[in-house]
Length: 113
Length: 112
Image 1 (cartoon, rainbow over the protein chains, first blue to last red):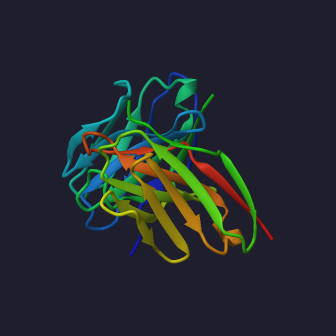
Image 2: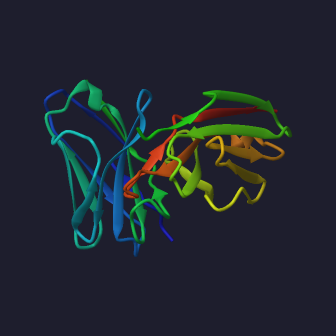
């Protein structure tokens, strides 16, 4: 079966702009979690969506937001981009969410200049 | 606070050697630990997990050991191959059980 698909793979944005990243989970998976990966901080949890509802949220500013659609596809948005937002953004889907049974996508590499 | 750390950022081995990657965790209440492998340009891939009621679990060429007394995890890879070259992360659930906390990662380099 198809894995977790993230688009786009690479993105370059300017400070102050906003960006939207997309994640299509494995068919049948209702939970989508987002993580930010940077060399300095490693992998950090952003938020989780389950059945179109944000169920859990990490310690990130309000500029980071997301949503989930009825087909379980999820988008995350970052507004007013800062240089420090440059990172690999990873999406993981699972059947029941929380922290079990994650399958990760290959990520979107965001560079803010 | 919650944290999962690794002892060494890099590990270099020869093909055919056995590799041991270590991880220390801080939350003694954690009941579940996972090892992930991340290859260049890809997301983390599940390798093996272990529950806190176990000391050892074996997979295909991999073994995870859990020492709850000293809060230490290790991943052993037998007969390491060039395809094992990647960054390895240990992870545990956060206290609320809502997300995973990842260690900083160990980069394994296998030379042939």
